Image: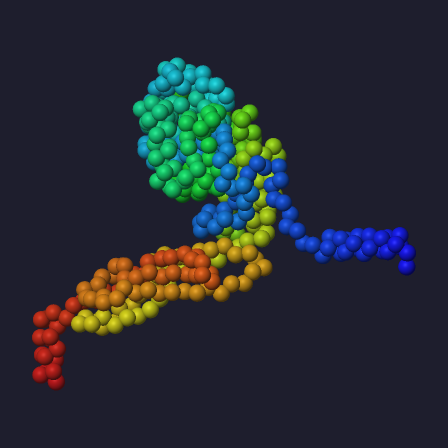
Length: 375
């Protein structure tokens, strides 16, 4: 066997091996390759379904306005009306085109903020709620801190570029999740068209989020764009009882990418209730009580998300407080129930009394003696 033939044989064997590896390899497809970062969560449980560079701090443009709307809704009546402050008029970028001296309702401004992405509406609301823009931004950052968001910092209420105005794809999902707990917020972001009812003229507003027309079950949430941030989108949809929220940052085909991520989430995952609220958990003997037995149930539900092709066995641990004594009243917390997937905590809920348990007082013993003698 000559040296040339041996080299050729070795090359063929190597090439064959590489071909076999390619044939048998099952590499995961890259999700959202056009996005600088992305994250997708299930809204009720908060479970992370997909991510790429989810914790990288990036500018977020007008997706900022999710937090702006949340702060406004938490701090004033949407039917309030006020005169537009001068500093809001002529704000650069996307606009409602508010005029000097106009008297406009908070409701109309919120629709202008979220549908038309009005930067002027953001400034007007900030001054009304926070006293001035800085005061309002301080409220935004305080809310982010209270939510435990460590990579989010606001400088403006509208998302116009500042080097220190940053967040992450994952934390934007969490902000949207919090905002969506407010029914008014969800109603606004899912609205396609809106006509204002206050101000010097009627404004017809169209939602910039094309998913509302093109994706089944979509309900928002917010678009954004600046030169520095690129195209940004926080999106959400609901199908088969599962609500999915996601974010893509600096993603040119943001609507197409969002639809692909939503499809992947709904096709791959399902929401599972591991423990239901009001589910019987245990009974325990209460010393020196009239009823003797305390019935215990779960206070809340524990929900998780699982891959549809996955089966799991959860471990449930009920920890009833030791040395419980009467009286105990219905609804009183008497312990905690934890659900584990292996060694990982899936969720917890309080254990509560299902019935009252009364102390054996003098009246109890008197009635007992009376019954004995009567017998």
